[in-house]
Image (cartoon, rainbow, N blue to C red; front, top):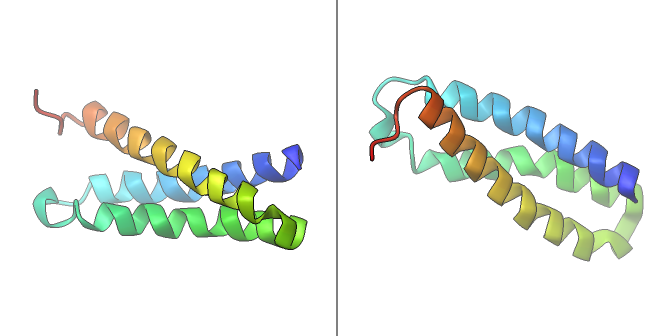
Length: 90
């Protein structure tokens, strides 16, 4: 199970960070921010499907916890990318 979770996390981070990096470079960010949740949801799907494919039905609780943790990680990554690009105002 740890190998499956680490591969799913890597898959989710690769897809998620790529989509977040691309979306943060779009002009006129005000209309795209609500779409960030869609980007995060789409990027979590491959990781959750990987867990379910490898472990079957008994992995549903692990997949749910994985989804919550990866959501938090991707939101934090989006903040860091926006901060790096100077899009965060204090």
